[in-house]
Length: 413
Image (tube, rainbow, N blue to C red; front, side):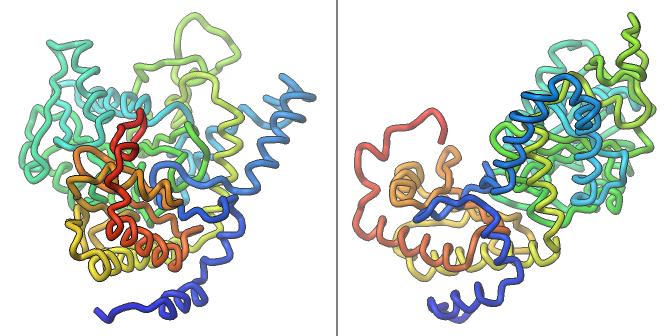
């Protein structure tokens, strides 16, 4: 690979078809934000939209807004928009609740699809909430449900006639490694096992084709690459063929066939609407819809191409400029096997990341030793990558990271 110069990198930005999107985000000056895989930047339009929801829809129209401003249909409307980003059809995605709650819903749904099966499977090292939800569900009915964690290399081989569901992350939150969704889903189906895909680090960062992979269920959050804001509502995908098979365990009033009939007994709504639970957070939905609309304007193939190129450039520059400082790739170096993030092992990773943040390069740290850098292609430039590695080299050369204040663990890493 040819050694890159700043002129080379500047030319990449000049020829970037996604470059105009950067101006539509509110990015602080003198900040290189490489943490969009954890919390996306603020779309400028979201400020006006949330203002309008608060001042006019809530402040003036009040409860009439459930009808006059279509609050009641926000979960389904935004769900249909997200469906276009993940290869789903209208009526297969609903917005609401958190990823953790939606994992619970999908796990329970799988237990209902085949009541003779009782084991819920995920891999060791998966994002903790996925494993915790399996553990929690199993604790409710230990004589009926079993939790099982298996090593990543043995996931498909571990499935058998007792397996009710396989829960996997499409893009691993630490390493960024991509799973082959189509092949794994097919292998699981050959053993009669439905698959739940966690798309939290994929949706909005790359093309996803759930129906093309014959996926069963999927969940994902709205605050990473969808730029919906902190704690934005999550989403749930349920393949149409499964929807009517499920009586939701979280049978909240808004998932009722006629919520405003106020019946004493629960009758599930048709289709995806039965996977709603409680009243949606309208302010959060409004901010999320702005982020989703913005994402829908972008060409997903161009976005994936830039994501891969940004990651490749970061890896190359770290190898060229920081080769003597002990950074060991924790992510695949082949972009086709990697999501929109790059990770490195380093024994002093936490302190190094804190020193970078103090210098205006924001990534994050994942225990025990991973520095994680996310690349949101709509607002990250190639020059951002160049400058970030330049600062990393300076932090390491000067031993700036080796200070007590950078070694004190904060509550959020």
